[in-house]
Length: 207
Image: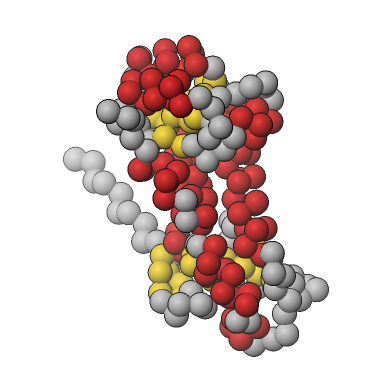
């Protein structure tokens, strides 16, 4: 009889703004550079003690405004006013880089008809639609993939650049690690921006 491997416990850290202990999946780690600057550490790999903030724009803004980084680090550090913008930009790049990797590995299909075919065949696990794309095309695909998460966080220009193709409006991801990683980062980005409308788990087709 095969025993199921125990699930790994998610580490927890305390948010320096709210004072609450949360799973690291709900936090952004920051580190202090050798020059004394506060830098985002999205992958939690930089050396030194981590400074953790709830993964929300308003929490990062408050940490900067109220000098919570200096207090938590017990040192003189510099946290730029645009730190939240930097975090959002890096989260976006992380998501788009994963889309590029998925295209190169064959796990991503783009183009309305090709995406429609993958949905009809039940091969897609995540649907992507450009935020500035036509609503009718998006809704048609959403009806085919009614139970799938839909990501509408990126515009045509961003998706086209990430995938190295022109005018990318629709795409789909097939099952695999990249799809899971992308969806995790997309939810993280939507949550950070407070973009509930574009949270992947909330997208539903029009009746």
